[in-house]
Length: 375
Image 1 (cartoon, rainbow, N blue to C red):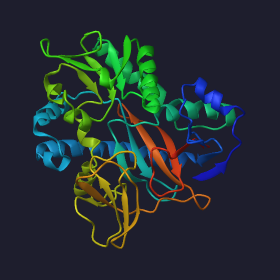
Image 2: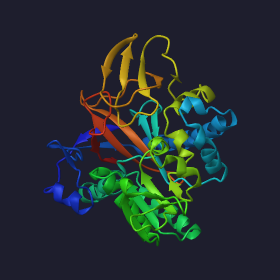
Image 3: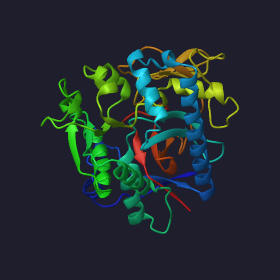
Image 4: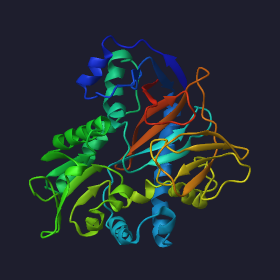
């Protein structure tokens, strides 16, 4: 695994915009950064792929463990939604995608930092933008990336099972979220779905018909939402979710895997796994750990402790219970770049990676996306 400097394409901004990425720059600094790439060997890609499959199996077993032992309180799941989640799991409702965030240097085994199981972004750049970059800049090499093909497969499966209009929704005025769901909507249309987009804020509830509705009062029966389950459960219409007659993606059981409390459960179940870091609901002995809010997102409210003393922290709106994960040194390239490998799993298939890097130890929502190749 190497970090290699690259020459950005002329007019690269217009190129990525033509492919659907309009959020390529943040505060005047490239978020999509093709001035470098990460170069892997085929064997290193095999290691990442194997780790992803193993972690996925472990996570599914962890969900069953949570349900078997009624560990709801650890996850802050309100009581009215517990049977809703259990029913979704028992019915084996399809998952579309998720992203494992891994620390990896090409030498040691990948270590799971967290699992973005419900509303992962950086999808368009991983599936599409870096693929076209590869074809333009390094056509003789390979890329671990069949994300688009796997997404098309799952949407075709869903289309065969359900002919309803497929709605796609995200919060208003969030360009990245809108473009992410627009990409997924485009894949669904390729799979044969009739689709529609609406902002989360436009979803209504018809008390008489007991259904969620769009602004035209049409029932919403099938919906992909880039909006976290923990927020939905606490919204005004949240109490209607169990009886609302809508099939949501990601499915309700993903509320367990998207919650950082799952990291502590995984450690309890698999303390010998080479892919896991010790994680607990209490501060770790020795004092070298990362404190992460159970319901935190996008690198907010993270605190890094060394020998029990606060070393680094990020601001944010999240408080409440947290998990404590053993501090693991991220690899450092060129003396200043800390990459995190996002390994995508789509419909059970490990199918690609995307790399976010920062000059800070904590990866946030503005950390740069850097493409990759392998020989």
